View 1 (cartoon, rainbow, N blue to C red):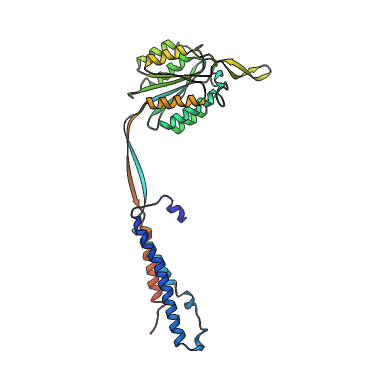
View 2: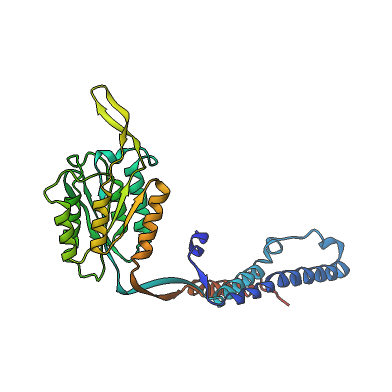
Length: 334
């Protein structure tokens, strides 16, 4: 219980703890004084009184112990135990970001560890942790698009939504235009000075109600910057495929419409990246993090709550008990 009390305690004047050296000094003084008194008693006493003892002799040091406890509490109180509460005020503007993630069947290809989708989820979570002052949302797409999480500053909720992303949530396909259009729509009413979409895909547009060219123009109209990421190694990648015999691994050709992704990025003021493994994907998100810095100033105020009062009361109690015992139970009569 005492350790729990001191867990979050700091001390405003810790130099007063040097006074604790008085405790062993007083104990040593008490021991030496007791020996002197014992020597005096041995010289002047008679043998018939040597074996006399009482409970007073056993507990005669209690007032001294109470005095030491009182002194210890006074020293701790002088050191000013206190708790610190930090209040943060944010000034400036963050960035509104939509993570637009492809969840089509090809994202289960295992040229990344353990596969493209899980690798994309991991770097997305790490990216969220780095953007503490920004609003971030998630849009997923395959043959259609869906808002997995609207813009929010609650990053714990955001990361839990990223964890729930998996293949099979939507109709299969690769609707890049629909994914981008939905992402821009999430940012349409944003008042942030910087609005960003990070679009990650491993395929070629082959579905959706909105073609990529139209989605690109919508992004330009709402001044949304789009960073595009093509995911996949060169050549072929091992991919789980459903067959009448069950799930089997097949080498599927990696086909990314890099021309389209470059066009979307360049015309909206963004940049195109190619990720061929986990490390390069992580580096891409780190680079985007550096490119899109929030113009936010965080001011921290420290508020201290004094916690020395219990030690003052304890010291007074110990002193009161010492005086009470000295003038009652342990009173010396002439």
